[in-house]
Amino acid sequence: MFIKREDLIHPQISGNKWYKLKYNIEEARNQGKDKLLTFGGAFSNHIYAVASAGKIFNFDTIGIIRGEEHNPLNPTLSYAKEAGMEIYYLDRTSYRKKNTSKIINHLQKIWGDFYLIPEGGTNEYAVKGCSEIISKINTDFDYVCCPCGTGGTLGK
Image (cartoon, rainbow, N blue to C red; front, side):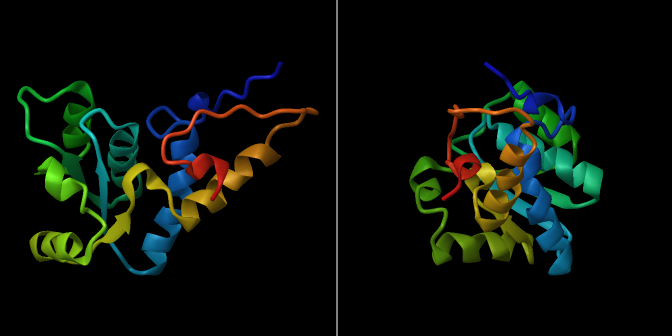
């Protein structure tokens, strides 16, 4: 058995998050965007990673958080805020509609022009980045086991 420790590749943007964000950041730069907006729960590793990426790569970041605000903030949201992320809460009913033009237009009225990274980071750019993971395994294998949330690490 071989275990690939992707959690060790970066202190704040670790594991699959590095690969999911790699080409999204490149695309945001190509589009001339300086602001990243994404979605997640209050304990989201993705929110943590995007906040870190914003700080490291000089982007403003906005985290749209599912549910109501709770104070004090948990460690994930405290870190995101310390890293410069603006936190905005969407009630659960609205959050379920986060991909609709009504919600996206509402967020654009509040935050202006932004580069949208979907919840969990999964889109074509994330899949492109995650496809690089398997090429970095330098041993023969019969099976690959991979935990997944949105499925971007496994490809679409």
